[in-house]
Length: 272
Image (cartoon, rainbow, N blue to C red; front, side, top):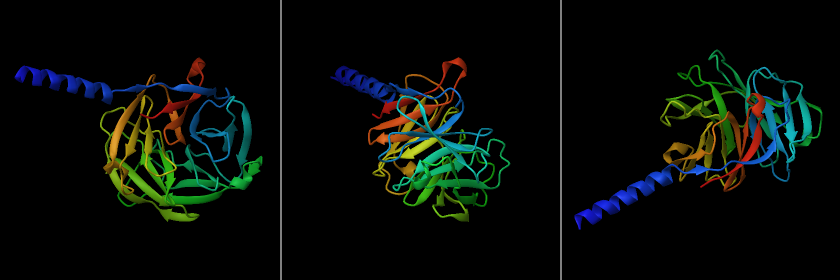
């Protein structure tokens, strides 16, 4: 009887390991145009089949739209914005798009920006964006951010670090303000830097992106999302994945930067 129990326990243990280490397939939706070599974010909006993307530090202050065939459909110059280090995109229920200018690899920035591009301007070639400017809370220094989303009229920003990361929130309000600290967290492991984030339309699932995996967070009851259930879901390959957004409740889109001759793609990925 004891031997039977031991064997059953071992079977259950290995079944758990296999479940915990599931690898999911990335399905190519389209190629990203060749001249967009450093795409750092992806976003979609309701009633629109386009993928909205930006490039990061050192590139143009432009918002681009790519169709499902990988063709550049829109190229919008944000006239009153500088691309100090554009890292992320999010949107609201009205179809307005927000650009997160808060990359801080050098650790020398004191002021950070979120640019709001109105839905009514998404067919224009040149626009002026509204600007939210924020500084870090007292005691929080030298943080680099690449990930945020909009939830309950606040932006939630995740710092990109190997340990003792911070989750901040900034009110969706034009003008200057100071971000507020929500919590500190550690996803464990040296290769766990967060490069993008999104929350599902029903507000029940958060996804955080890394080059070889994502974390799915569910079961949270407040904006301290890390009190929920966190599951790592691995991809079938490792590349410089920089953008994530929800397609539907069970599927996400993921974008990557170009890697030499390998190119870059937009993928879909089924959550499990």
